[in-house]
Length: 193
Image (cartoon, rainbow, N blue to C red; front, side, top):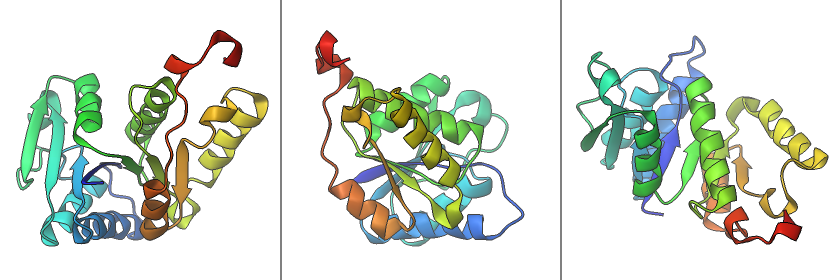
């Protein structure tokens, strides 16, 4: 993987571990020669992620909607800052520019990006690995919810391994490197659905 889209929050939680995690994520990716594609912000975890990668000499591509860039939250220190019209174009650019996705802690926007990456993989819009960094048990309930959806039958057996979870970046990147694309819905027959 040459580039990974990293989804994370723009907030700064009171617990400093989250900012450290974001900084370490950027640093780790840069050390491994993997470029970071992210939301283009300079605040919160987004800013820490970018700083970690840039400080380690890594490539950082920010993709930010014009409305957010205008509110002075854009990170002009990025290797490249791409302004787009809106959120849909932003997520398409994340997909086009990256070889996989990693979600670290975040809020509603982060969840939107994660689930869209999973949904697009399930459908067949991409065949890239979708990783979830479950640091500090932050995503324990989400992982359980994903398993519940599969158990009930809302996630087909062929798609139950799209979401790849790991507790450390090393573990997660290793699992993502081993990812074998599944059969997307676009290639399934009606009787398989």
